[in-house]
Figure 1: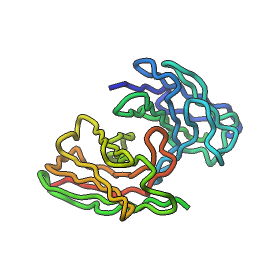
Figure 2: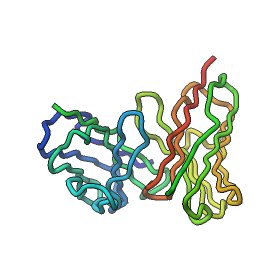
Figure 3: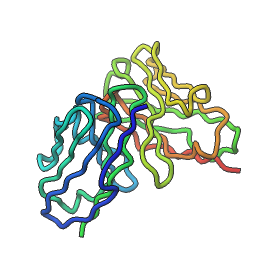
Figure 4: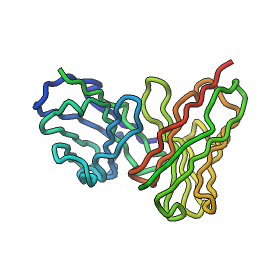
Length: 107
Length: 116
């Protein structure tokens, strides 16, 4: 199975800050990488698909980049409603695997 | 509006069985791969299984292969997960999700607790 790692495991930032999360795959997954947001007690929500494509309806402050094994997720200007855990997910091979998550707190 | 509504969760003893259901509406169910994803309390997401549109292809994570069975009934717009020989470590919220790669739609989840 492809292993996904994320860093940092958690972060705390102020409203308006730029936030970045890294995701690394244990092998080349091309651009078969998605990013999800999960708020407490809720189901995950797809934000970015195929590494860099913004899901319709998702605010443009969210972005993704990367290919191969190294990927980055960014929030350009953190908002209070962005309090959540963010997961990357590869779907290059079965089983699809998720990263361990990055918990984002607001200072 | 796409809706996915899971049911069938509950408390079960180790070694027991449960059958989860997911009722789909708001889209042409037979046209989509469907999946189950679970989340143990306080833990991350784990993909469990998926099933192709016609039901001919099914995939499982190694830890549940031979123990869980995914199925679908396109006439009823429903997805199922038969879970047998349940273990304490199967305790989780189980979500159904639409799609094979990116899961654009998720249900609200159903909690399965395996405990004596």
